[in-house]
Image (cartoon, rainbow, N blue to C red; front, top):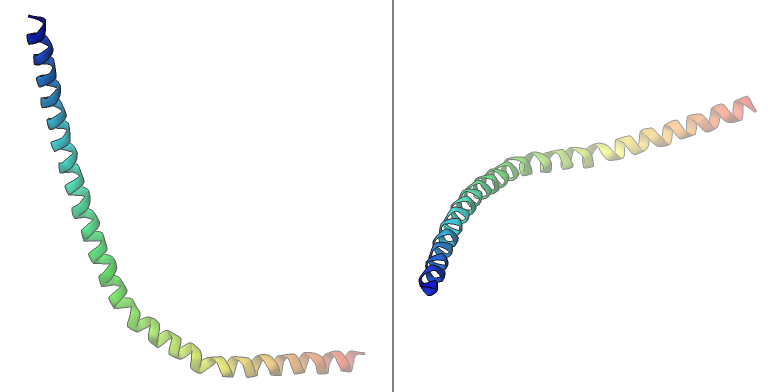
Length: 86
């Protein structure tokens, strides 16, 4: 009689284990779907941003020499003012 009770408990435990495993697999499937959707949105956003970044980089490269020249002029003016005040 004890074997029947032990066997029944093992069967019930296995049924519960299978139920929990199925539940976890369902939640993991939902997580996978959400992760795939976010990955697709990330790739789409990257595809949209890359051309704008290329244009921005080109603009910065175009303006950089002008900014460096302006900085050099400002430094020269500061040196001239410093020499005049001395």
